[in-house]
Length: 361
Image 1 (cartoon, rainbow, N blue to C red):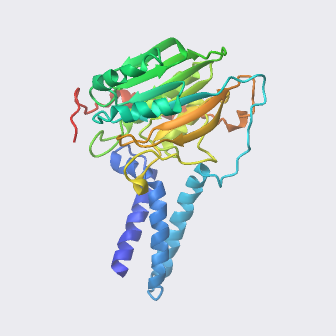
Image 2 (image 1 turned 90 degrees about the horizontal axis):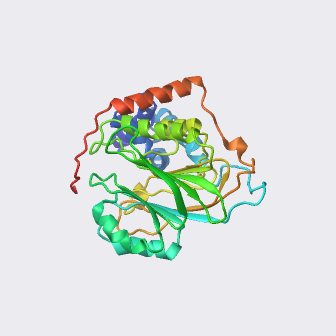
Image 3 (image 1 turned 90 degrees about the vertical axis):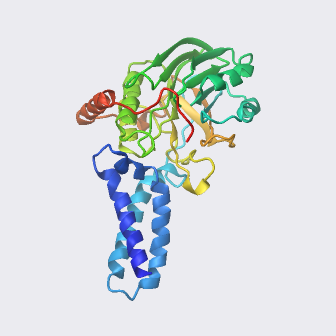
C-alpha cells in the first residue's frame, strides 16, 4: 500500500508540474483541464497518507501533497463564491433591458434535436448559439426560425460548424477564419429593441488532445486573434463559446488581458460543462468573457440534451455609461503582447489534422 501511495503522490506532482512547462504539446496542456479533480484527489491522498505515518518518508510526501493542495486552491478559489469580490450594480444612466443567451456545443452526431429545441422554448433566450452544428442540425433548427428571424449560419461537417439565431435584429455579421480555413469564429453586431448596440462573438477552437490536435497552437492562436479583434471594437462585447480551454490557463489569462474583457466566473462559480455524462469528471471549458459595460446577472448550466456538453445560460444587461467594473480590467504588458503575437503566428503556421467530414468515434 505504501508503494501505491507513493505512485499516486508522484503522479500528482507530475500533473501539477506539466502545465507549467512552456510546451504546446497536448501532454503538457491537458493537465490544466483537470485541476479541480487533481486537487480533490490530492486531498484524498493526503488524508489516506495518515495511515503511513510510521514510514520515515511520510513527512516529506505529506508536505508535498499539502503544497500541491495550497497551489491548486490558490488558483481555483478565485472561481468560487468564497473569493471576495465587490458586489457591483449598474451605476450609470438608464441600462438596457435584460437580455438572455444560450450557447451549446450540440455534438454533431447527437440526434436529439427536439430536446435542444425544447430547452430554447423553455428559457426563451433572445439569442442562441450552437457549435458542432452541421447541415442536419441546421435543418432541425428550421422550426425555430419564425421566432428567431435573424440568423448567421456556418454549417460544416468537421464538428466546427456554428449557427447563431436571434430575436434581435442583426445589423452586420462576419465569419472569421483567423488561423485555419476550417475553423470559423462569428462576429455579430446587434442592436436591441431599446436601442443598445453590442457585439456577440461565437468561438470554438480545436482542443489539444490525443484524439484531436497534437498541440494547443491553433486553439491559442484563434483565441488571441479574437482578443485582438475585440480591441478594435468600440461597442460592448460578449465572447461566448466552447473555448476548449479553462479560465486559469496561460492562454485564457492572456486572452483576457489582450482583449480587456472580464471573466464573470471570478467570485461566483466554475460553471463546468464537459463531460455532461460524468459529473465527477466535468471541466469548465465553455467560457464567456465580456466588456466592462456588460453586467452579468446570471450564469449557469442547463439540463442535458444528449450532447457531451451542457448548455450555458447567461442573463445580462448593458450600461455603457457605467465605470463600476473598470477595476476588473487587466491589461497586457509589452512582453505579453509580443508573446500573444507569436502565439497567433504559430497558430496560423500549424497544420491541423481534421477531416472535412468527421466520423463518429
